[in-house]
Length: 302
Image 1 (spheres, helix red, strand yellow):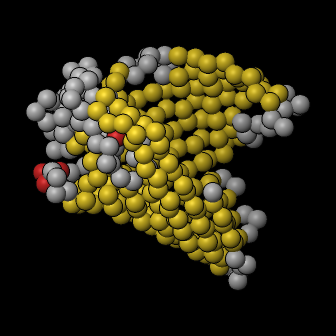
Image 2 (cartoon, rainbow, N blue to C red):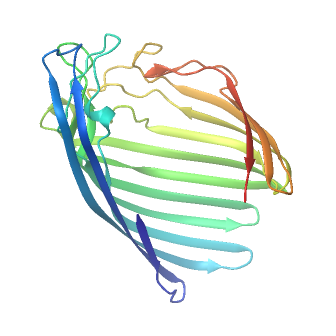
């Protein structure tokens, strides 16, 4: 659970203090690794973790009028991510070799953000710089070959930093253009298990991510959105080998065009249809992604 406390504002300054508590438990587990190591099996796998994660933020608002708002923010906090059962007990399949790591620990991070937000009648935008110092990082090592199987391990140190940029431009009434961009410079800083991974980009994490779309979102009546998602190809091994496109296990350049249209009644009943990957782009995101698809939805908001 989480607890946040906002201090009274003194002029243009404000602060927030947060505290999150997590308790995680895995119990009465077992596994048999039949394909890659028939002799490997364990019973009564169990462990628990109890963690406190504090966060502190400072907000400075030098400009706050009916026409313009300028806000500066800075925060620092501690976080963690548990190792999932899939991380620990991934098994050999489809001629891809994996090694079990039942002793995989949770990863910890210190997160720092500094950013600026600006709003007026014609523009809403924000720009943030972020930095994550990661410890005991959960990290996929290996190449998937029998002599060098994939395995999730706790690397020594890692760092992710970059920028997050978001912009919304109102066009007419409830019609707006929205876009966001993320730069993720993610490097391994220390890894005694695989020294050749030091200085390399994280596995499965793109350097650039871009989303852009047009939304028409009135409170009631017809609404619609069209948006696109794009990332360039990214690495599938910790040595950052040259990327081979259109093969199982690779992370290709990714583009998807999507749309949503619906109607919101005044009694808050909503009907909509969503269309994903309209261009039927069958790129590989380790596995080959689904082609064009659509969904129908009925929703009611109290």
